[in-house]
Length: 220
Figure 1 (cartoon, rainbow, N blue to C red):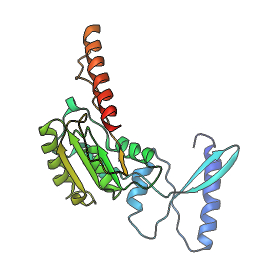
Figure 2 (figure 1 turned 180 degrees about the vertical axis):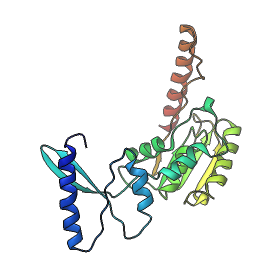
Figure 3 (figure 1 turned 90 degrees about the horizontal axis):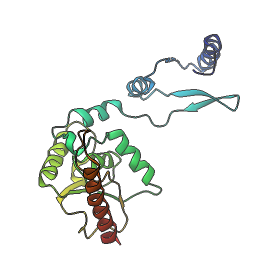
């Protein structure tokens, strides 16, 4: 805790343990940085529940954990999938999941990523049980995403049959499902080495501006 001295925390823990003991429930306390990982492991038991204690407006609050990031799954998706390419960008799976959560103000029936790269957004959609389509202008990315799908379907809990990857130009896409949500990390320009000239940046800007202008015009 950043708000309470250690003796206060210890006192609170004793009080909480006493309350739970009266109802024949066991308690344990974690005072580590990677609480999510420990909680995820412990939650595999159906008899386990987790709470967080925090201070807000000079009051202490006890919060029930309802969702915790799946550390093991995210690590497999980010570091073990067979098709990865730093030149394409390395969108973290956790960030892709956050993007989907921010986009889903309603229950989506379909998620489309028009710049799918290695398929990261699509895999997070599958984990949420949402059918998905990923497309890319490069055939090697489509083949790589398919390899990742086949690999992850054996490691992560999702239905691979709900995903499809196609080679498409994002500025010419058609037939997007009516209720689809578009979630993507688009093209960010050519890979940089750190010694680019101002002219090179300007050329990249023009290319990217035209790409997204054509993309949104096509959607309209």
